[in-house]
Image: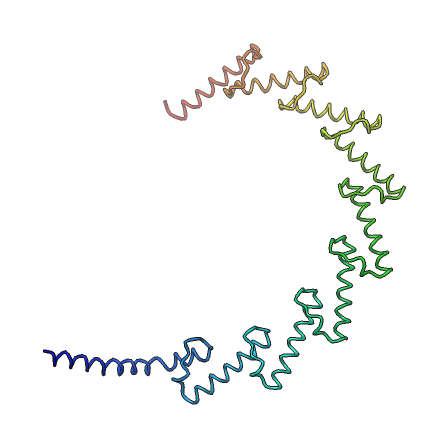
Length: 297
């Protein structure tokens, strides 16, 4: 019995390595070669043939060259040839110049040539000028030339005038000229008149002229009359004239009659006249006949 167990163990020990070797021979080499060509961690270089080792070495050098060209931290510059090193330095310089020209914080100005540094300074000055002209908080006024400073000052005055004309809180009235202050005051009065005409609570009637006050009151009267005629909650009946009250009452009676015909809870039967009651009775009678014909009952 013991001899049989020892024999089975011996057969297993001999068969499993052979089977594994056969499986590796069947699937392993191509899979392992692909892993090695891609530079993956589970590459087994000891299982490669001389030809495959040459392919893997070439692929590794190509990946390193690409990494160095991209500025990747895995770059190993000691593996580069003189030609490759020169190409990488040129690519790094070009990439750094692009960053500097576009104003990126990753720019390394010490890597620029004097010619490139001059071009970068011009680009930075142009960007700063645009920031100053638009009133950007990142504007550096110290970097402006005398001509640019004049342009920036004029642009700032124009922005302030525009802000004052539009009633913006950023307006600085102390920077306005006498003519500009007059224009701003006129614009302010115009905005106040429009608010009064719209019935805004921020209207200041003391700023209105007699003609504007008369125009405003007439617009308010018409708007209130329209609200009352349509039964709106904004209606102020105390602002109506006797003639307008009669007009509003006539409109209310018509709406009340329609509400009663529809059976709405807003119907006020005390406002109905005899003819109104007759009209409503006929309407309900007709509706009952229509429903009876429709249901066939």
